[in-house]
Image (cartoon, rainbow, N blue to C red; front, side):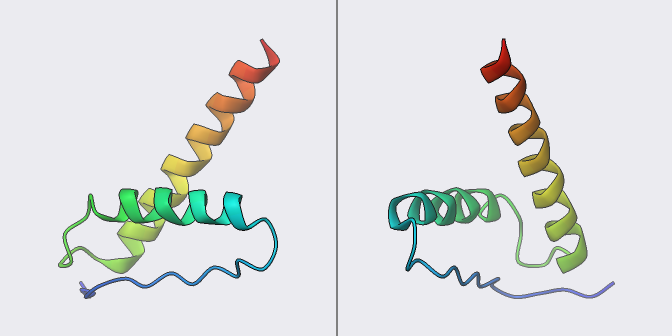
Length: 64
């Protein structure tokens, strides 16, 4: 099992500055849930699943 230290995320904020800032804050908030000792692949898969399910739920609620 490989471990990672702090995870850095870079987002180009030239367009959609406000939305990009909100997205970055949300990703950072979610990353704080994970220990620095957790496997990087696990963190990325978990984030992808959480964000995907949240998106699908928001889309479903919008259409209702």
